[in-house]
Image (tube, rainbow, N blue to C red):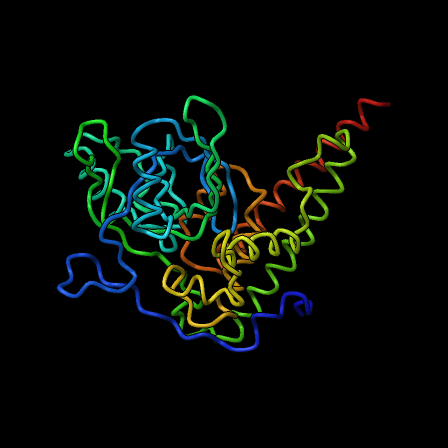
Length: 321
């Protein structure tokens, strides 16, 4: 049975929300963004929901994007992810191959790089600081969700201007549509995955501590519960001059497509479980629209990392003989 620490979102089964209509619909949904400015980034810089990062802005288009986002979009902008590898993850749970092909063809026609994810990470500005005399700014951002590009990004006003596109929020589908799988069994499965993630993470931390100097152990240093709390604190923060929100639903309902705070908590835990994973696994988690599938991916990856560390430990013991 799942431990009590991961039963907190099992109190009720949230209803599934329909996916928002695409921009071609005559009625725009409330979760669509008519104009989202985009910051091109590599997949190694991907910011997952609940994570915080510090960015350095110097270029005119970055300054323009910052000003527009803070003034018009509550500080939100998109992190457009380019990838060198086109390796596919589980097709039925990811942004589909047809969507990828459509986006690549559209980008090619517009003269833009084709190796771009059809979904962007949605970031929100939390703090801005000037760091030197040349005008550079340190921007503290948090990941708040994902958005699907609904139009091909276009430059604003000039050839080297900031990119913008229409987009719509991408949420999770917490429960699958499998008629043979009840809501309760799916919630229990999710809770069990989260419990196993915590166990594997603790084991990896202990193994890495035996292999490396204490100050070098950074990847698995943060326990899962602390990672969840850090993400929760970041997501509840409204701004420097405002009190934090009380519930995740207050902040995330339109962005995550959540129907209750329990569902939002489940998604938060699945994102926190992926925080210590490598770049390819993080990108795979980003592509998933199933909360249980993301938790399962984190479990598999941590189990693989644990096996690797155990092998390293055995090799070290052999070398010491």
